[in-house]
Length: 631
Image (cartoon, rainbow, N blue to C red; front, top):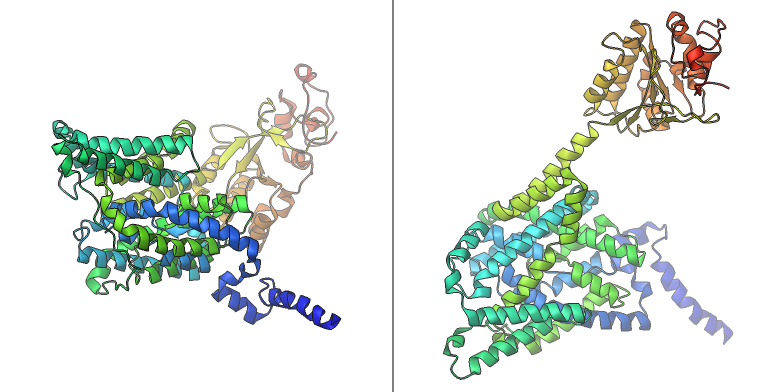
C-alpha cells in the first residue's frame, strides 16, 4: 500500500521531469522548441484554470467592439476583426513565449492596411479581401523567417520615438477617416488626410446635427465611463448608450430627419470559414513591400508589449520564439478569414490585470468570443454607424500619447526631429514609408552621435590618494603633456573625428608633443581605429613625443595585441589601472621647457626636472596643490 502511494506521488514528478525545460536531453530540447507550450503546461492546475477562464471571458467581451471597429478601420467587413481574434489568438498563445500577450487585430496594423491597400483595390470588395489575406500570409512568412534566423534583436532598431510618432499619426488618420461618419457628411472614399480636412472645412454648413449628436453622445459617455469606472468595459457601454439614443431619435414623432441614421450591416453569426489568399505573382508584387512594413510594425508591437508585461510578471521573453508564434498565427489566420494580427497592449494589459496565469487565457478568450458572436451577431444591425465613429474617435485619441510627446519635445531636439518626421510622413506620405523613414532617421542620428565620441580635456584628480582623471579639476594645461578622455567606440565611422582631435593637439605652435589617452570609456575598437592609434603613435615619436594609454579595457587591448598594433604604440606606453602614469611619462618631457614652466600641475614638477636635476618650487606656485604622480 505504501509502495502504491509512493508510486502515485512520483508520477507528477515524472511528468514534470519529462517537460522540464532545463533537461539536457536533445529529444526533450527539440520537443520544447517545436512545442513551446510544454514550457508552461506543467503550471496548469485547478486554480490557474479558474483564473484563466475569468481573464478569457473578460478579454472576449472587450475584443467584441474593438474587433468590429478595427475591421472597419482596415476597410474590411466587421466580422473580419472578430475572426482575427479567434484562430490567430490561439496559435500565438500556444507557440509564442509570453504568458500574457494577447494577439488579435490592432489599430496600427488596421490603419496601415487601409492606407496602403485602398490604393490597390476597392475596400470591402472580394478582390480587396483576397489581397489582404495574401498580405497576412506574407507577413506570417516573413515573421517566421526572421524568427528562425534569430533576428529578434532587429525590433530594437525601431525606437520608442518612432513608435510614438507613428501611433500619433495613425490616431489622426483614424479620426480623419471617420469625420464623414461622425458629422454625417458625404466625402469621396480614399482621399488623403489633407484632402479630408479640406473637404470637412468646405462642408461645415452641411453637418447633420442628428448624426453628430449620436456620435457625440457615444463619445462623451465612453469618456465619462472610462474615467469614472475604469474597470468597466467602457466601449461596450458607450456603444449601447449611443445605440439606445439613436433608436430613441428615430422613434420620436416629428424627427423625420433622424430617420436616415445608418446602421452597421448584420454580422454573420457563424464561425470563420476557410479562406484562400490570392496566390499569384501579381498579388505578390502588390503586397510584398507592404508586408515587410507590417512585419516590422507587428513584431515591434508584439515584442515590446510582451517585454513590458514581463517586467511586471517576472517572466523571461524569447524574442525569436515570439516571432515564430506571431508568424504561425498570421499564416494559419489567413486561411480562416483573419487579417494581419499582432499583440494588443490594451487586451494584454487587461489579461494580466485580470489574473491570467498561463496562455490558456487567450485560448479561452477565443472560445468565448465564438459563443458571443453566435449570440450577439444578429444584434449588430442595430448598431449606428455614427456610434461606431464615436468609438473610433476614442480609439484615435488614445493613440496620441500627449505626455510622451511633450516629454520628447522638452528633452531632445534630435528626438523631436524624429518624432515630427515620422508623424508628418504618417499623415502625408505612404504609411509604410513612415516606418522606414523613422527608422532610417533614427539610425542616421545614432550614427552621427557614435561617430563623434566625446573627447574631454582632463587633469589628474587633486585628491592625494586618487588615481582618477577629471574634467573639473580647474588645473591649467601642462605645456608638454595633454591628457584627454575618449568616451565612445573608436570604429571606422569615428576614426576621422578622433584622429583630427589628436592631430590638433600640439599644432599651431604648441609644444604638447606627448598625449595621454584615458581609455576607460573606449568600449570597442575596430581595425580602422587600431590603425589610426598606431599611426598617431608613430607620428608622435617622429616629432619627439609619444602616445600613451591609461586603463585600456581588456578586449580593446587584446585586439591591439592580436593585430600587432601594440608594437607601434609600445607596450610600455599602455598603463594599467591604479598606476601613477605621470611618474612614467615625466622623464620623457623636455627639461628646458620644464625649467621655465610656471604651471607645474604635477607633483614631479616641484621636485626635479625631467632629467633628474633638483630644483626649488616656483615662487608663484608654492601655494598650488599639485596633482598626479607619486607623493
